[in-house]
Length: 428
Image 1: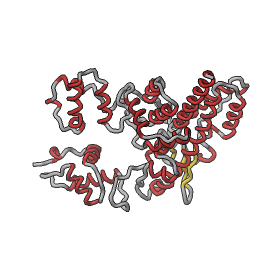
Image 2: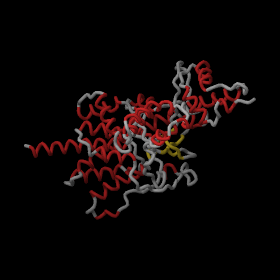
Image 3: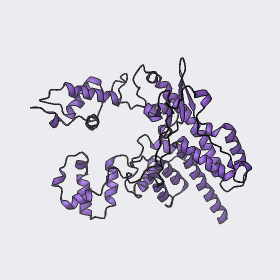
Image 4: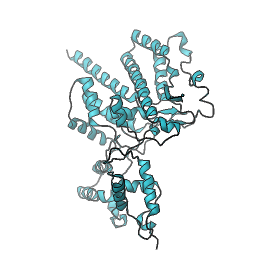
């Protein structure tokens, strides 16, 4: 009885892990997918005569796209291969050692997969997305507290402070891990907000406190690299016809015939990794379908921009998700690390998205790039003897454009435009 229960628990954990791997597939590039598929082929075709056959030809659909994808347009960007463990792998390796049930393990996998390179949790990820994933696989409705509990455990892994939603949250966790007394911790926490907002003079801070401040990081994941490819190959190709744009997956390295051969081989196999392989193939199909649908929506919405007749339209992951009835986190994953070949350039799929500024008047379509232009115009035309502060620029924009915007956003965009502070802009 106990043996049967152990086997059932092991199978359940394997199924949960496989689901997490399916989710992870969404964010992988075509290069990474082909590498994993090649490994699967080696495992299941090892004894076949055709084991030395090259299953993948790293080329585009030449017959269809020859006129568009000339040698000048198709970019092979060489990169260094990074064999070091990356941040997500490091966190997942530690997370797997924790005493967890299947649902907690799945929640953790989704959270860790949504961590950006600097350690920040993807702002597009919503707890409702995780709840939906759990419900679909376990038919159980979970509360936010369970997700918060797992998030807290991840934030306290090494390096501490990763998976943060705001920098204060990360620094609070990092302070807890410092080997200092309670009084020093309390003093650090008291001054954090002032430090974050640059409202404190570091010269006035005691040396002992300053030494501990230097141990904190605004980029807790920065010590880890990320795996990079030898070259960038497009995952998609967009072709302009007379009246529209056509999008196609650049997936000839995994033809339908090849996928069917692999499926049949896996189905007949008695290999211990059979369930894992079937899960991978299922996740692969989901990835390809989702990638195509998302890319098609993006290209259609940005068609005027691609034609050169207008600016890029404001378009967010959430808007795409609503059009396709999928979660914003799925869109966020699928556009990550994906390249699309346009007639004259190779670019990231994510670059065709554009953030929308929160506005009171929904008929006004304002993006962050538009906002930067307005800020530049305001500063250019201001009275140089009495330049506007970020707060005053904020008020001008809110009145002129009917938008809601934070002062710190104005400061951020001003710095990105290399516009000096009010004091430095003042002329006598």
